[in-house]
Image 1 (tube, rainbow, N blue to C red):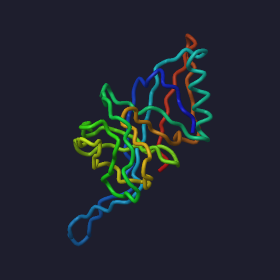
Image 2: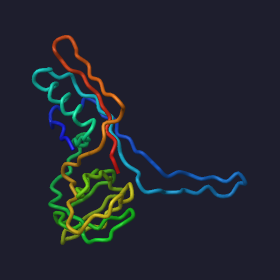
Image 3: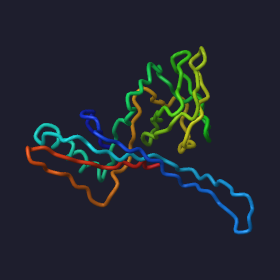
Image 4: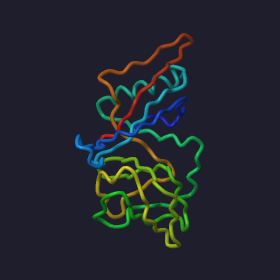
Length: 197
């Protein structure tokens, strides 16, 4: 997995949610049902600001080309949201599944905001999630966190949950990728990342 540079940040970013479930209706007028399937995930379309080719643009282009075959990782934009000091949260116990995640290691009484993003650092890679409702860790730093999407991989007890600097990791979408070489020796580029799981 190729780590994209931390700087500069995107000039524009458009997060998306890929849903493999759906609503199933009946031709005979029965109640419409929601069918959830595991595997829902996030994607992120990014437009970078113009970058001087010799200094920054060359490195971004190089890493994205390599990332076409190896995948990429970058910080998920928080739009000025300050996640504060979450502590060192980790999965609290094995055997977890569904849409509630047991976590320990938070700063006591840490507040997770509705819509706050975080990632699960699993052995297979990073998985991005969002908090579904405001949740406050107890005095021991434990919390039952409602999340979306449902867990895509069972976290091992003690695996890290990164609330301070969430990352998105996945493939660069498309069969080919292009960048713009502008007058004034600037590089312009855009790309889209979709999670693998």
